[in-house]
Length: 81
Image 1 (cartoon, rainbow, N blue to C red):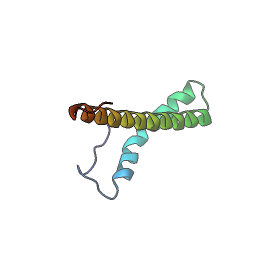
Image 2 (tube, rainbow, N blue to C red; image 1 turned 45 degrees about the vertical axis):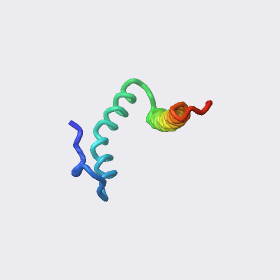
Image 3 (cartoon, rainbow, N blue to C red; image 1 turned 90 degrees about the vertical axis):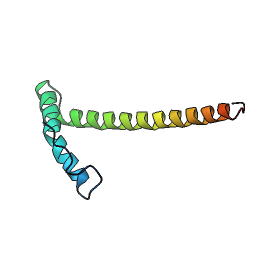
């Protein structure tokens, strides 16, 4: 079971609480990877790459959403794209 934040809004230790909530799952993933034959270094490097890929995807999605919003506004205003 993953712990929920203590408050719905931002609070000083929210990131620490998130990290603590994630720790058991993180250790489980690392343990499974080690049992499967991957090294700890490979596992941690791969997790870092997954995080970087997710960040890039989020940025690209935001860029696309912005471009779509601009195109929709221009169409509503009757301006050519």
